[in-house]
Length: 188
Image (cartoon, rainbow, N blue to C red; front, side, top):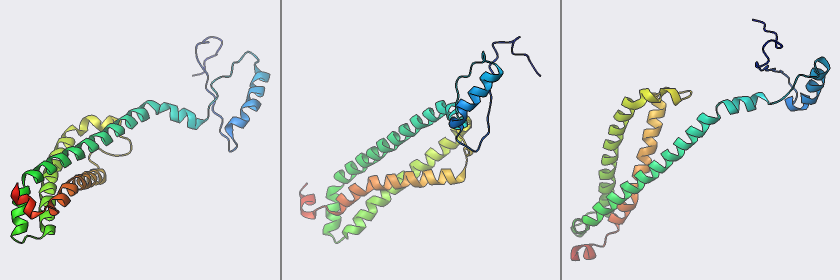
């Protein structure tokens, strides 16, 4: 459909110039040629295609960046929570750990037991979270680019990352349990 611009002045014209050279260097030349054709034709908002593409996804990029920061904050808070719970459990079990060490348990075995308990709890939480995320993924389909909500590579990489964070959070109380002095633990 060809529409004369003189009949519909509200319509904006968009011109796209494909070039191998620097597009911004060609702006003065294009402006001069357009003014030769029609001196009343305004030329404004001259942008490269990269700028147009970046502006078109700017809002979603901001939303995704914000969501990423919230995710990092959530993982940090989860790690702090796991650390706090495991540190509290180790402090409550200090007398028991002292008895075990006194009876000949190796410190590495005590540490492995605390790590195993923390890993078991983290794995249960991970499975519950995975089931909940799969149930809620239908609503997330509109904001995901390039992946499916049930993409196995993404789910596995996120699961492994969260498990590593949980194990790192459990490692500090596990090392503390391994270093418990049996005499001090028995006096508590």
